[in-house]
Length: 191
Image 1 (cartoon, rainbow, N blue to C red):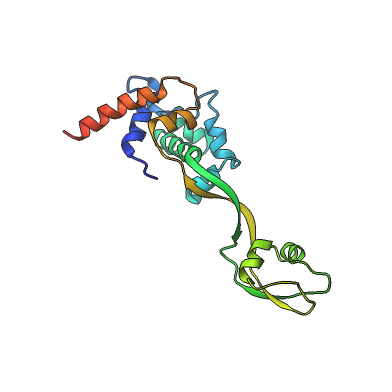
Image 2: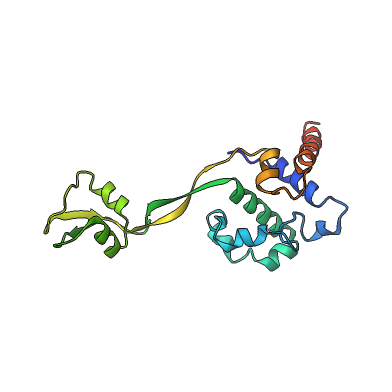
């Protein structure tokens, strides 16, 4: 994935325009009344929690995004990245945990052990690749983990994909406007 700063600048030009009073507070449209992007980014339900770094979690709020232009741009880029990311739910180990041994009890299954140990069946299978039937008294390796939403890849970033996924059809000419603004910005940077 390649995110060109010139593309972000073109988005700002298209969304606000330099002669608009919104330029001083909301250079990108995220945070304006009726825009769903702000709640999508901050809710944590659509992947924004994976995009926004922990240091910014408490600083990017509806108030700061609507009043501080630099925060508004950060939120706009964050929302763009959530719309361009591919997400899946996967079994992930807890980075703070270490491997340890668990003794199998009568009647145990991988599912029960995973639940009791706050792990997942997939983690148990990865740590114990030759595991077959469990036997009482058997020792298996374990590590804490959970099934979590993760970023698995990125969609191609282009003016068309931004118009479809980020703008969501709000402006039928958004891609053409981005193409035009981007051509001006690129021409200026080559001088």
